[in-house]
Image (cartoon, rainbow, N blue to C red; front, side, top):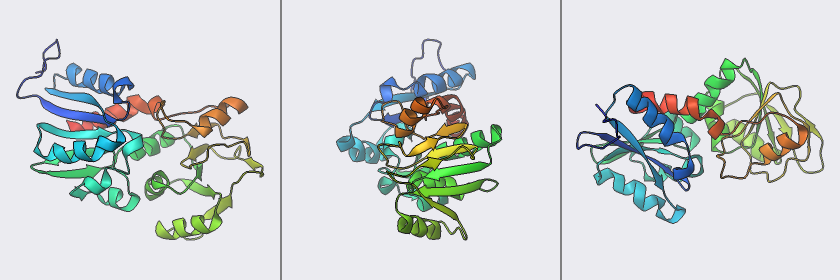
Length: 251
């Protein structure tokens, strides 16, 4: 049982939360509260890691007392090359947000996109617009059964290649670029997984608008949502659901 003063014993199961600004996130506080409420001798520790130190930190987990780590959104692609084994979703999407140490090997899995998918179902969103073709777009597409998804990108050739890679036939693909006028009001949700620095071409957003960026990352979607008076949900806005899912996986 975890002590009331949160002391760590030799039996305590330790996990890390790795991010460039992990210490300012509420992730650790929320999940440690769950461990304490359920008398679990488990603790997750924020680890502020600079990009240059990421490989060294994660690879050295193999020989440490840390049992694994949750990975903040800015590092989800970089850690994949360090893994010894990974789930099929990690391999297909190219991203990983939770790592388990199993003896002297690291195995990677992915849970944040599952949380987002479940949240969209909870709010009865079915018609989804995805902007961009990155790892988040791939991961969500692999879990998109039950959703009616339309894809948007500035490069249609790249978008065609993307839909071929994720094996979607007759995909609804659309161009979005500076100088255009794009109306998303007919969608239940917009997922911005693009690298756009500006979304001023969007004249109307959906009722629900998401990206998986934390508060330390610039969000063009957040900026445009504020300008248009629409809702915006970030990674940090989903923290309660994310920590509940991570709790069940770590325990």
